[in-house]
Length: 90
Image (cartoon, rainbow, N blue to C red; front, top):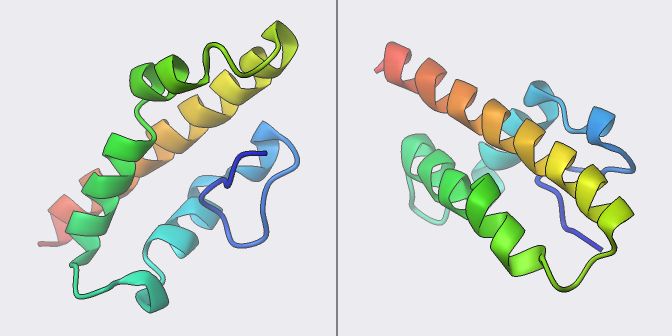
């Protein structure tokens, strides 16, 4: 089971919306003294599609890997969008 970066978990890649990911990543309860920008950058490193794929390659079936890749790609795109948004508001 993957702990997707959304408040109530995700059952499919469609649950990984930019809004849900932003709400989770920028939740002040998890700030730990880090800025929004720092938290988003950390999440980008964690959810980088290549790195995530390497960690997962031997642990999931081919069918699951396809769905997981869609989810990771959605998370990665959302995080990059959030980073861009934060950069514009600085």
